[in-house]
Length: 112
Length: 111
Image 1 (tube, each protein chain N blue to C red):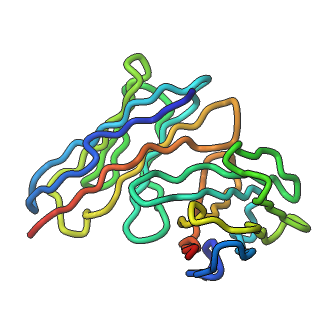
Image 2 (cartoon, each protein chain N blue to C red):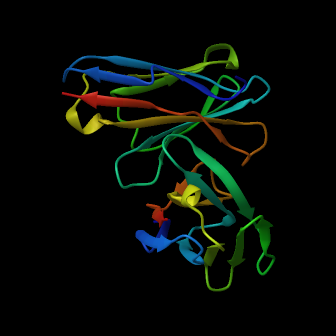
């Protein structure tokens, strides 16, 4: 499969725990994006990487959220001290040019 | 604040009907308007529109952008049950890298 791969597909965690999600973009894509989507809403932008540099962060990305893209390949999104409001689908996308996004299937997080 | 508004939020039609989905936007330094189809998980790309008045077509789907009135429409003719999905529109600006999505239109096509 040469698409954008996200793991895990589903994650259930207790409030207060830390979680980490992984995204493997399409190999020749140097741009990588994280979005969050809740039920009945469109995806909301979280952050953007060009190669290993994090170039933009949304104000939605509180200090409990951190994203990395070491070596400009895969990316991780970590949420510390999860809250119930963090329950959502976390979508990763990658692109070669500025708008040709390919989305992954997402990681669905449920905080109980 | 930038915003993208889609209407209707949900729609139920019979197979064979034609539907028109609407997207209006207010985006600073607008660049392009994109349409995506989201069935269960990943949104899949349909169209990108940058210029006014130029219709883009793909099979039974077509879309057009009006940059003066700040809206776009997505038309689906001869709908099929496989068209059932959430249709998302998103605006891109020259000011950043993010796409600003609307809430989507949930389309259900019944046999």
